[in-house]
Length: 217
Image (tube, rainbow, N blue to C red; front, side, top):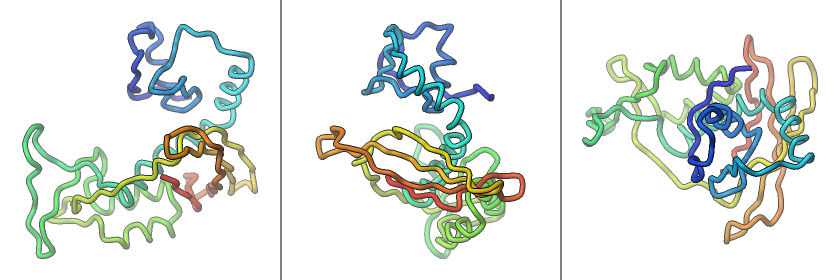
């Protein structure tokens, strides 16, 4: 199992022992543990047998889902929430590129330099049909061999909280269905129940890709 993980924001990070910080980042980033709320991990607290069971269940059953889900969430957001990171000098305005359709900006994402690179990357996450629909938006295009985009953004749906549970159902050797239970929040961001969403992954060449990806945010 690859245990590399980016640093996770914690309001009680000073309570986490230095030797365990990498492990804490890993279990939080992969959602094996979700802390106690408000970006708090409470590392000195004990956990119950029930919590231990849930953690082991997630590690054994959900690793492959979360790994693909995190990539898909980021990529889905490039089209329907915001834009891929754009090149610029830190502290200075991003310099635009003039085109006949208006001013666009060069994308800054390691390993994705052209529209073809973006398409190939998306096909490791989503079915070919979904990728075709995403690219039809015209959100991204090449200018002088560089991947560019128009800077756009919209709000997200904050009436949902964290993923509470993932149940895996193997349909066939090439198809897996995941039923995902997500926290449903009221107007005060208090938990009022749960809602289920169904994700489907199918084998596409060497990759498992989402053929159904219901994004709730």
